[in-house]
Structures are given as structure tokens and as C-alpha cells.
Length: 308
Ligand code: GLU
Image (cartoon, rainbow, N blue to C red; front, side):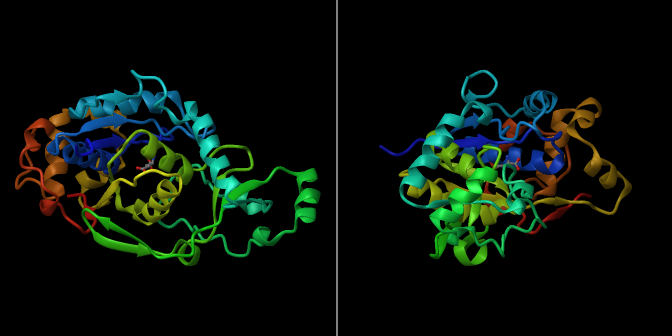
């Protein structure tokens, strides 16, 4: 029997969504529905300080407005918000720790790194200069007195290849290209890389569709899932929307969906996004459902898309 197709929406409620997020959500939904798959909605509210209930509610409203539905998940079903899943992250963390794959990091810099959020462009990830991996047990014990550490994963020193469904083969050696990375912050909040891997694995996700700014996270996530005993999903990254030159594009690009929802019908936005990414050849209102049968990654732009 073949594995059922499971796609996911995984927004972070640290702000209102913008058009770029909506494009990724639309493509995730089309990819999943075109394969007859089941869609899961996971709320990525890992960081209590940055997540706001108003943003969480807006996300569900945005998806409904665009005509993108889901079969299980937030808010109808329990256990689909990351804030409710700490025990599962703890279990995965302990399993990595039992294999000697994690170590405490006492650098102040670790606290500043926003490890609970997905890394987005321009953010420096390589934490050069940290020597905590080399601390002796005695030095750790002494430091433990004064402060609680963040926990880092020893990045695997091996070439990991993913076959991205849109961008093709992508290789990375995490030890060389990224360095050891935080999987639990000093305040106990689990980091994005760990949480997203555990969730995709336990929720049975088989297709991850998201913006290509997260392509460089995919090899680490594949490695984490496989190390935890799961099967990694297929990854399909999509182009990002960039600010265009025209007045309308500037306005549209800067508007949050809270405002867009008041001013436009969902079908107008779906039509605009489908046209911009290459799925349709004219900018006209269309329902997401109508796009399913003709959906193909071959039609989708690879370059980032300036708003027109
Ligand atoms: N929650 C992440 C974000 O909104 C996306 C995570 C993912 O798709 O892996 O940036």
C-alpha cells in the first residue's frame, strides 16, 4: 500500500501574514490537493513571547478567505499548536542526548539567536567562535552554577542531499556550512529546527511546500527526522515575492492580510498570485479549487517574483 499524501500549513503567529506567505500557502494546498492528499494545519507558536492570539486567529481566517481548507489541525483539533507539544520535543531531545549528539552552550550569543523562529534571508546562522563543545565536565559543572545553558546539536559532518521538487538537487554539509545549531534555548523553548522536524515526522507529513528561504533548513530537517527514526518528507520550495516598482505593488506588498481581506475578495488575490507565479496566463479572479486540476510545478517560476 502506498503512503498517503499529507501536506501542511505551518504559519508562525508572530505577525500578520503578507502576500508572500499566502503564495506559499496556496502552492502547498494546490500541491497536496492535486495529489489527492490530506492537508494539516499546524500552528507554529513555539515562542510564547512572540506569538499573539490575534495573529493566530487571523491565519485561519486568511486561509478560509482564500478558499484553502484543511482536514485536521488547528483550531478544531487539539495538539496541533506547537505550544501544546513540548513533551514530544522533550522526548526527541532526550533521544538525541542519549546518543551524545547534544551539548550545553553557555555563550550569551546563544540567547540572542532567535532559534525558535525559522531562519529567514540575511540572518547569519553560523555561530563561529563558540567553544562550548570542547568544555570539560568540570568546566560545565562550574558554569551550570551560574546560568542555564542553551543546547546545541552537533551538526553532522556529512553531505546531505535533498531532491527539491522544484529546485532539484541541493546538497549541504551541515557541520561545514551551518555549524552546530541550537535545538533548545536557554529559557527552555525548543528551537524551530527540532520542533518542525518532530512535527512533520509525527504528523505523517509527506510533502513540505514553503518559501525557498527555508531550503537551507531542509537537509538538517531530513537528517533530524531520519536520526529520530522517521521518514523524511519530499521538499518543494517556492519562489519568494519581492517588492515591485509600481505604486499598486508597493501598496499590496506592504499590506497585511488583515487589510487585504477587507478590501479584496479571496478569489481576486488567488487570481493575482496564480498569475504572478506562472500558473495562469491572465490576472483574473479564480477560486483555488478551479486551479487544482491544472496545477503543475513545471509552470511555476523559479526566480523570485517581483510584485507587478
Ligand atoms: N513557521 C515557519 C514560518 O512561518 C515555516 C516553517 C516551515 O514551513 O517549515 O516561517
